[in-house]
Length: 160
View 1 (cartoon, rainbow, N blue to C red):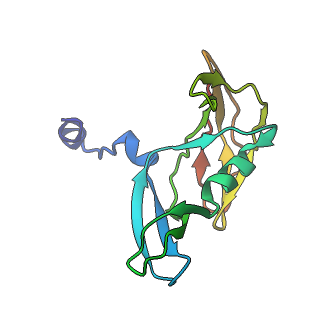
View 2: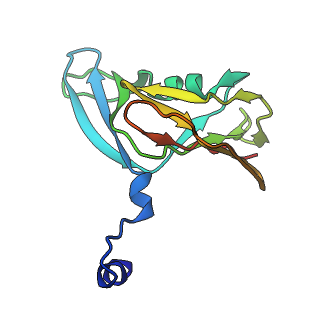
């Protein structure tokens, strides 16, 4: 419908969600035989596990680092490594910091660890610059003066 309205006005319409879309290339490799699989997954945000006194850069690094998992390969191997890397980048990157976790006795608890929000995130030769931070019901924004060479915008949102 919005495309039709824009077209009738001689304009083009781009869905705002497209600004948030990006892809991760996820790879699983068997530690026994070296065979693996590759899958591209589409996202509009990343949910990052919050850990003690860290930065958004470190949280993102933890999300993307290779992790070991149990996987029954055809070679009878049972341990694989899973890793992810950006295959496309969004114009606006939304990071969701998970502030709740389960304890060993399966109770939900709030994480009170502080997080330093980086103004710049470097991802595969592109720099994402902080546009705004959202915390609870308050919103603060800063005017972006100079972006990186790709003019890529980023938005980091934190919820409490």
